[in-house]
Image (cartoon, rainbow, N blue to C red; front, side):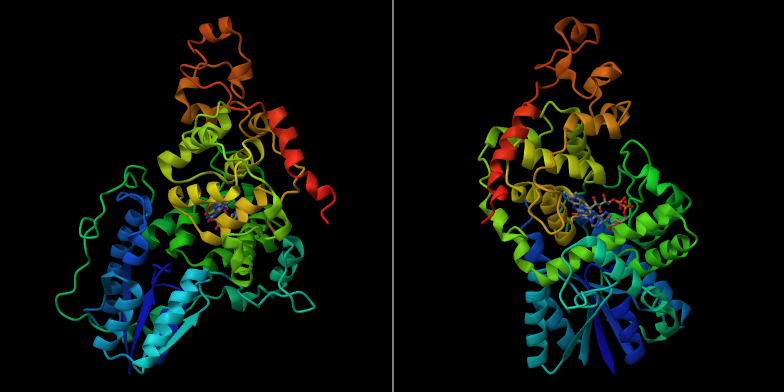
Length: 483
Ligand code: FAD
């Protein structure tokens, strides 16, 4: 018997749900990854850190599959790699290989669900079965419901129920290696296309030294494990190495969520607050995936429909200033530079810049969400949408509409000595500490003393926070009498 495992955002071969089930049930198992032109063709540029990351991770996965098979005495296995419309390529390949079933790990995004339904239909017409497995998250779809059987829309009770359900079984790794003898040898002449074959140029991923593939993920994990206990205190300070930086690996599945949860649960049980808080972050990830699955309309609409009454401003100049890190608020600008230069942005800063765009500049959260989607290495529809709707106060369990971050006090609290700001805004390197959070407060002589001319070397603030705050309260005023 034969099967094909279609890999998408699960680029590893250890603890892999679909691969495990295929190997257990079938004698010969092939694995395929498709560089999907239905997605790639829509990308605005031909240089993209994510494509680089995937390409490097696909090469590593091919190597890992080869080793796994060789270790089981079945050499010649590896990863089949295609470049084309995934929906078509997978069906054609399944037919060419004469498999009985295509197995894959489940996706929760509306477009992916629709694509998979099409593929399942086409396969069925060819007499081939299609099955999908939970792998991307710990608990999915209807696994965590309220006592009335409804999906949660508030995080804290969701997390309580989620923690209760998260037992040893849910965190257990799938023992793929045990059945690796069923990996099938690849047909002759298979090769992985180069980045250039895909029509892409290398990005700066390698020079950023972002580790790729399963090995890269394990490297980051080993680096984080001794820091997990301090996560609680360190996680909010972007200048400090306080977080795991594993998000891009979770995005592309080069690490198993079960492995991370098992480690966090074990430490959390010892009363370690850092581990408990980190586990909560993994719960947020499941929560937003669950929300997207139950409420696919959030892709374009506010989770709470009443918030679609908000009249956002059309402010192209302010929008450009935000995108180009020229707002005159150093923490916001440093964060946007971090995003543009590296494709990563610290969580605290994602909240700050999202709040700034929506509540200081009055611009629709959907514009910011799209911008993040283009630039984040770890871009994930459910977490990104959840994060933006949280900051804009339109989401489930969001920041209340009348709570508006002050970009200066956020900066004073979370980058107290301006270390992060100076890293990304070298033009402010010589600005004294007491002005680093808001250089616009400097008098001309003080500017001269540190060799900075506002308006020339660094922008004047594009808005006054106090006035912007008032405007936002007015914008949401209808919420005082929502009916
Ligand atoms: P850690 O602090 O080490 O956390 C571990 C993991 O938990 C993360 O890798 C991530 O998978 C998960 N996680 C942490 N915080 C959150 C959260 N608030 N919501 C959901 N999952 C979380 N995360 C993404 O993975 N992709 C996105 O596109 C994304 N967009 C965001 C947009 C906004 C406006 C906001 C406020 C947050 C967004 N986040 C997103 C969540 C969070 O900022 C990142 O997951 C985190 O910064 C990644 O860094 P890390 O891996 O070092 O996180």
